[in-house]
Amino acid sequence: MSQTQVLARKWRPRNFSELTGQEHVVKALTNALEQNRLHHAYLLTGTRGVGKTTIARILAKSLNCEAGVTAAPCGTCPACLQIDSGSFIDLIELDAASNTQVDNMRELLENTLYAPTSARYKIYIIDEVHMLSKSAFNAMLKTLEEPPAHVKFVLATTDPQKIPITVLSRCLQFNLKQIPQTQIAGHLNKILAQEKIQCDTPSLQLIARAAQGSMRDALSLLDQAIAFGEGCVAEAGVRDMLGSIDQGYLFDLLEALAQRNGLKLLALADEMEAQCLSFDSVLQDLAALLHRLALAQTVPQAINEDTPEYARIFSLAKTFSPDDIQLFYQIALHGRSDLGLAPDEYAGFTMTLMRMLTFMPEDLSANNQPPQVSSMLTKPFNEADTSQQAEPEQKVQPSPDSIRVDLSGLDWPKLTQQLKLTGMAKMLAQHSEAKVLSAENIELYLPDVHKHLLEKKYQDKIQTELNSYFGKPVVLNFIVGSLTGLTPVALQQREEEEKQEQAIAAIEKDPIVQELIEQFDAKLIVPSIKSIQK
Image 1 (tube, one colour):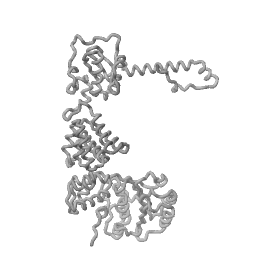
Image 2 (spheres, rainbow, N blue to C red):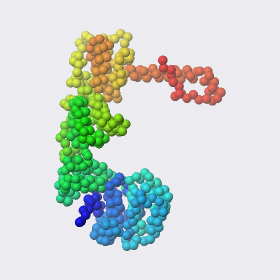
Image 3 (cartoon, rainbow, N blue to C red):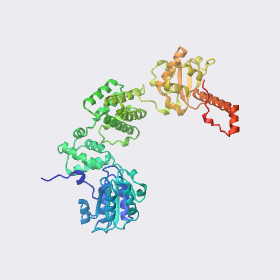
């Protein structure tokens, strides 16, 4: 009975033109080979399955092909065929993870003195080179510094930080990157077309995402998907095989969030728990979906039209503001990191959802977008956003007779101290300057640097406190603009600075302090002086 060869081995690239996703390395090595500018030691770094060993073997063929040193080895001569099959006598591959000791390295290095048996160069490929002991690295240094002309080293590692700098400095280093999902999916599609196996686009995208930049992992998963689907690769089967989250759940979560439907959020969480889904994976996929929504809002061309749920992505992108997407993304990331600290995963996941619901702007709805910042810069905030004002009394303009009536003996800094404000609403009030202050009308200017405080819920709290203080509705307007006087915060800072200066002056004039300075050449540490807060 013949045994089927796994896809990762069957479709391993045989030359540089077949490599996927490492164009920067291919270009550099191709130019070096064509110009005969060869180095004696190469270091290939990168995560698993991105092509380190494959590039090393192609380089070995390029150096030993019977057609001569070339960037395009023939693939048909005995040297190329033997390298492909792993039987080339002058290609020595060593797994440093299994041969860490100095004795193994000394034995290998002693063999470098002998000329190749039949090849042009003797090639040493040392995989996971960072696993070598310190003594083994020291033994390697001399050979790396003055190698025989017929020897080439190709070192590969997933952790270059553990390689001594003395070794790194003697190698030509290439950093292999993780292969983008689109390139992995495209490569898998080509392979399945030649294997004459049916597939759909979403299934390949799921496999490409699960591979996390590793082509070898993607091919292994594809082998598994073919077996799971009995010769057919389909989205439903791949999703079951990978245990992936049904994207429908994620869209439903965000739609329930937009509707402020906490009961629906919990019901969806219950459904996912009943299906034994990993809430860690749910939050990971939710963050990935929020990333796609952010792209749809800012760079819509980045979303491929073949992307599953393309229409639904753009529909949700219109539902939330960019700030909301950024907030939810951060909450999802923090929620995922906090899962291990939660009483259980379900509690940690639902708490993350409740956090998103709690911190949503109160005026968000599916068809009601927050005002653009540009409108805030030219109009009073209440005028720029009258569609979102809930209280009708805030829309009523005062009569001309009631404007510029001064409050006797009361200014804005003193008024903010009497209002029962906390949190961000207090910050908004303290960073504002009153340009108009009367019992009927208050106009506050806010510097541009603090315009992020202009959220309706903070204004509403100030409005409520002012109405309560004056015993009647007060028209409150915020304008983003330059200040001419002092805000409550600036006034408080000035008072604290004056107190600090007085404290320093008092210490400097103290007779005991002056005597210590004169007799013992003591120095006064000014930053250590603190005024006494009364």
